[in-house]
Image (cartoon, rainbow, N blue to C red):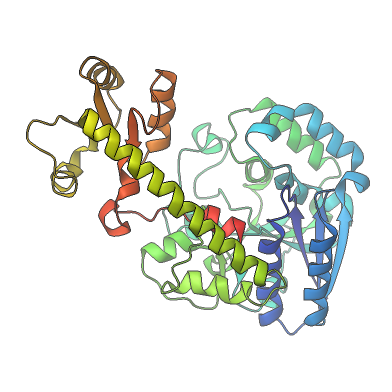
Length: 400
């Protein structure tokens, strides 16, 4: 029997379908007996529980449910007491549930998977991995991202973990016999002592095990964003859609792969199609209002552009920028004093053509400026090809 577990906190009931899609991908590719273990809290609805049970039954597999708030009440209370603000502002509490595997299952081995995973291979191959005496097996992030990992991490900058050893926590084969009973509380305490950690579960696991784990081959946790950038074909791998890299553009093999497995779940139904239609209609209405406000602002006020240094020539063409319209070309840091002066004294309307729009927006709001009245995201009015990156469609996917 192959044992696979998921952590599930589903505040609005829309997250369970991702776990279900991962389950479907496992069942479609694995003939061996599989038991799915779902570590959940009170946010698991009766409808989603029934969908999980139906999906497993359809494939003649098993699913079991574990309410961590009841089974691990002391640990969950400890977590909420010590990290209340972080959980509220930065993390989903469900990220911590994988760390309770030792407490819930005791000994033996178990595979943990994130919900943004598609297992496009026989998971029995991962299950058969000999863990030897290691506490866990995982893929180093440098391998998972095809050497495009983010290096600005607390554990790396502090020297606690080397870049070549830092591993992803989305696919883990646990050897629970080698995990200490105090691991969960010790892990929470580590976050308390190191508030700069940005990835709670992954940083805890790396802090404790990065120097002593079995490194898996890249095929067991391959980041879709990196594979897509390198134009690699879809093959037999475990694909990790980290960074909200699922889109609706189905001429992309990775998007189609996700949708093919999603369509095999009980969550793919008439209501799902209706929600997609409603979301697109709302987006269209919202953009119509934005364009109306933009036209009004540009008629009443002169424009000013904030553009990346390399993109100035392209922006001049795309936005028909006149020679007398100022362009603030920047390489890294935005000159907010200069921008604020021009916007206030010259009553300029700012069009921002930068990928870090949200960061700039927060600063401008702090200075008293208003979005759509004083400034706007110029990239919103550009095609994918023009803006040079793919705008996330996560909100649409999330609402399906």
